[in-house]
Each structure stands twice: as structure tokens, then as C-alpha cells.
Image (cartoon, rainbow, N blue to C red; front, side):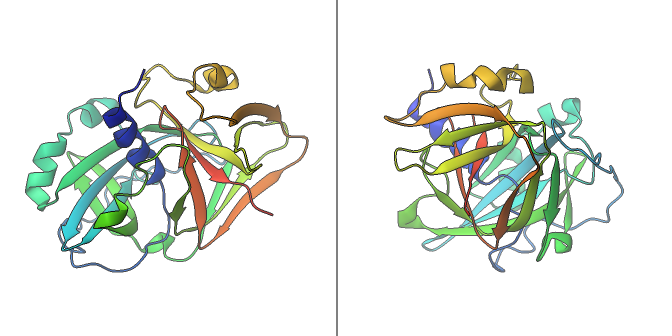
Length: 248
């Protein structure tokens, strides 16, 4: 059973994952120094069950929270020993952030991803010897709270992406009482370090779903795409797994 504090932390980490287009520049753009990329790791053509991690520094200026999102994709596969040695409090002190969250390990359940807009423009930073690319800058107002504090609740993520699911792939979906469908994009080993892709088919038995929400799985008979043209609606579940709203 997750505590309320655990739910908030898990949801914050999950919702911010891989927001590929920045919302705009901030006063903190140079708080984390850029480095020359020296680590290169080409993801496989099919990224289903591909491992990645994220570092998420949170800054505050007046009534605004600025959140930067860095991930390992294209640099490395998040080496476990170095990842486990990262200290959130030390990073926050070094960068003058109010908090630094570690998000991962995570694994994609999509087969392909294509990004647009500012995806290729993010700087490279080094966190404890793990290089990551800045993928997004998000901001919220103090009275709104940080993005993702509530589970099973829409969060607007500004990004331009196409997520592709191959024919024959199993997909994992949540349906709201209003009939909105959200398809899982990645699962996390944050709450349950033993969670694997094979566990997702029966995950519904473990979720604490809100009233009238449903979890279901199915195998696609043809290729399917989730397209976000600048804006995606993303929710997270009790385990930090993330889902994007399926829209026509």
C-alpha cells in the first residue's frame, strides 16, 4: 500500500518523463553546466522494453516552479552502479535547486518513437558520470502544485512526438468513467524494482484504481500510433507507469 507522500513522488516522476519539447526558456538555463557529449548509445530499432533513466531538477522563482527533464536516451542505458550512487540532496545543493528527483529505471512499452520541434537541441549534462540530454523545461505556478501530484489525473505535457506500436504488440490501457482511453507508454521500477514487462498483463489486479476506472490489455491487429502535436495528456498509476491519452 502506497502512502500519500509516496504517491505524490511517484506521480511527479512519472508524469514528467520524456516531455520532448521545452515549454520555454527560464532564468535557470545555465544552472546545470553543459558538457561535451562523450557517451553514445544508439537505441535499437524496436525500443520495446528498452531501459532509460531521468534526472529532474526543480527550481523556484517567486510563484513559479521550473522543472528541467534530462534523460539517458542516446547516451547510455543508465548503468546500475552509477545510477544507484546518485544522491538527490547533493545534486540539489550543487545546482541551487529546491529538489532533484531521480526517475527510473524506466522501460518503454512502445516500439518506435519519433520526436519533433526542439528535441535535438537539448544540452548534455553529466550526473555522477552518467551523461544525459535535456529534453524539456516545464513550469507551473505555486498554487497549481508541481505537475503530476495526483494519480489518474490529466497532466498537460508540451511535446511533439509519435509513439508507434507494432501489429502483434500487447498494449496496456486505462479507461476513465467518461470513456477516455490512456495507453501505457512506459513502465517503471521505482515502486516495485522487480516489475517486468511480463507482469503488465495482470497489473490491473494490483492497481488501486479510482471508482469506475478500468485496466485492460489487448493485442493489436495492426500498427497503431499515438501522436502529440505539441500537447499530450499524460497520467500515471500507483507504480509510476505512464499513459498517454488516445485521441482521434
